[in-house]
Length: 240
Ligand code: ADP
Ligand code: MG
Image 1 (cartoon, helix red, strand yellow):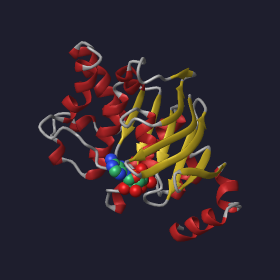
Image 2: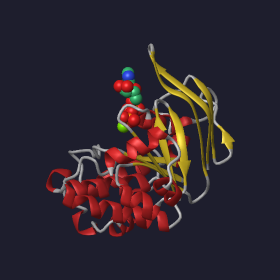
Image 3: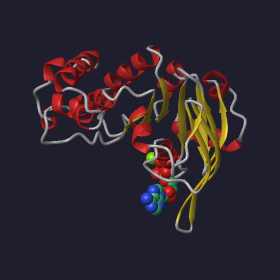
Image 4: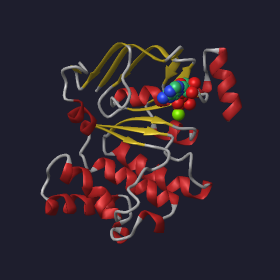
C-alpha cells in the first residue's frame, strides 16, 4: 500500500528526512516512534502530500506518485490523516463536520453523506452527538469525531499523528479502542504514538525513527524485547 524510497526533505538548511525507506502492506498497522524532532510528522505529511519532499519516491497502492502529474486531491482522499489537535470546524455540528468533505470534495449527495456519517458516528460511539458542536465535546469525543470525519472520505490508508497526545489520560483509552477496531477491520494504518501498549497489542510492526531515518524496525515483540541499536534502547528506556 505504501512504498517509500530514499525520501529526503529539507526546510531551508535543515535536512529533516535523510533518506527514509518504508514499506507498509495491505491491512498492516505500523507504529512509528522516535524522539521529538526526529521527522515523524514530516514523514506522515509527505505521505499524503501536505508537504512536498525534495528527493525520493513514494508509491501508493502500487502507483508511483508524480506530484506534477498525479491528482493530489485524489491521493489525499485515499490517505486519511488524523492530527493531535483534532482540527474540527468549530462552527459546524458534528454531523456537518463529518459530511463536509464527502459533499463538497467528493460531490456526494447530502442524504447519502448523512447516512454514511451516521453509521461512522455509531461506530465511534457518538451517534447521539450528531447535532452537537465541537465545543460541547470532550477531547476524546472530538478525536473520535475527527476519525469519523476522516473515514467519511473512504480512505484506503489512515495516518495518525499522535492522536492521543493532547488528551487527558482518562480519555486516551476510548480513542485507542476506536483505532484498534479500525485495525481489526483491516484498515492499513501508520500511527505515530507514544502508546506502547497499543504498539504491542495492535501493531504488526514498530519502526524507530532517529535523526531523519528509520534506524530499526521489527515486529513488536522482537522490537521491544530485543532492540538492536543503542539509540533504540536509550529511547525505549526513556519512555517505558
Ligand atoms: P517529529 O514529529 O518527529 O517531532 P517533525 O517532523 O515535526 O518531527 O520535525 C522535524 C524537524 O523539522 C524539527 O526540527 C522541526 O523543527 C522541523 N520542522 C518541521 N516542520 C517545519 C517547517 N514547516 N519549517 C521549518 N522547520 C520545520
Ligand atoms: Mg510530530
